[in-house]
Structures are given as C-alpha cells and as structure tokens.
Image (tube, rainbow, N blue to C red; front, side, top):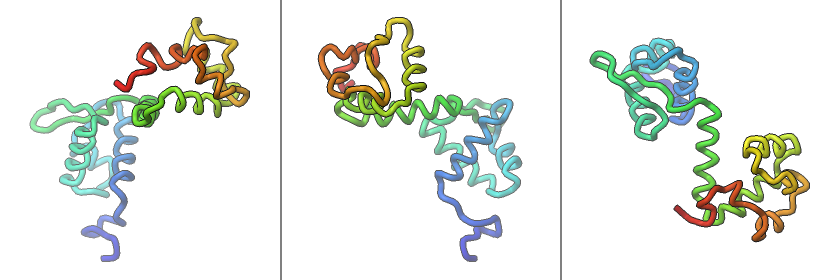
Length: 159
C-alpha cells in the first residue's frame, strides 16, 4: 500500500493532522462536530480517526467541546496568536532562569518589536531600559533592571 491507509492518501504525522484540523476549526464560524470536520476534510480521514484526533486535542487542552445532540462539537480554546503565546509561556516555564531567558529574548528583538513590547507593557514600562539589538543582557539581569515589570510579581519564583 506504500503509505496509503485504505486508499485515503499518504500517511501524515499526527502533528500535521492536528495542525490541519486546528486550522480548519479556527476558520470555522463556530464549533464543529467530528462529522462536520470529516466532511470539510473531504474524506481524507475516517470519522473514527477524526474523533480520535479531536479527543486527543481536547485532552491537550487545545480544544473546547460542548454537547451537540449525541456528539460533541469542538472549537479552539484560543486563536493563532494565543497558541503562539502559549508555546512561548511553555518554553519560559520549562527554564529555571526566567530572567535570563526573557533578557535573551529581549536582546534579539528588532527596534520595532521592542517598541511594540514597551507599548504593550503600558505606561509603567521604563522607556530608558533597552530592549532589542542594543540591549545589554548583563544590565537587564542586574538588580536595577526592572525585570519585575517584564516578568510580573512572581519573577523570581519557580511557581
């Protein structure tokens, strides 16, 4: 069969299928049942495969689900920027030195992105504190770096 599953096309990695289904759900006007997802995929996957993928994605807290008749209807827990932010938080939370990770991140920001971050941090953000390519990591990590504004009140904790 050379990669075909019951004549339904080449096998893809689970992550690819999840991304495909997530994109489909993000473009949908509302929550979709497994049958609706299967239909919109054009028969690429069996109904039971779609149910399995949606259930796994719900378990990973990527999807919300609500009862619709005898089935569940699924919708993403957030939009694409929200998922990107979740991935960034996950990486940050996996590292023991949050300040160092954030300092390196800020170090790599373009001037435009650094200005945008300052705007998003609000009026309390220290406009004299460098962010971006001209930032000095050692200064950002020092006691007067003001990193609590960037990290929040739990900056030093491991949660």
